[in-house]
Length: 278
Image (cartoon, rainbow, N blue to C red; front, side):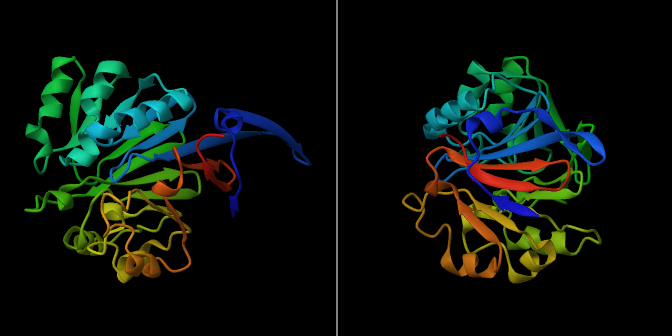
């Protein structure tokens, strides 16, 4: 079941609470996923229990937005930063981030240009461990949250297709984070004999029409679709034809929210949507 509500910062910062039913007292646990408005770029915060994870860092010019969002979310330490691929609108904020926040580990793919990028030398120079994630690796982020690497399966010529694609599993709910994956990598993912359905989809490549085929969307069957972009920076992003393909999905575009889009998932299967901020 999904619920669209305005979530306040007070609700956001709740780690858990208790409520009484006919079966007695029950503990509610919230997974919080924030898609930060960093312009035509990507940055996603995952929060559960006392752990904070960041997927991509936005661009160098969006560090102010990144910093404001992390401060509002109460983040000063990151258990891990995942850098999906080597494009500047995904990793450009890392230098600032690594100078100003404690980062326990950085995860990258062993494919594409990321392993020889300056951000890796920045991380190692600041004594931040860097670990390579292979296709089909599953990380147990917390006892109730796993992250599986669905792609890339091999190296592509186009760096967008070398994006790490993640499937998060939290109790009965799933989130697919497609980074900048294009149609070639998408087609290969469709060829894998596994369930890639998800309740929430971070739409690939800022919602441009070179990704998210009708077949791909049909396989995922998302209820929520998030597009991270600024159409003033990239007119072809949040493409109307692509949005039509999303069908009955509830579409959110980060440029429509001052600081970002917040989704909260509880351990009973409820999904709540709102905005970061007041």
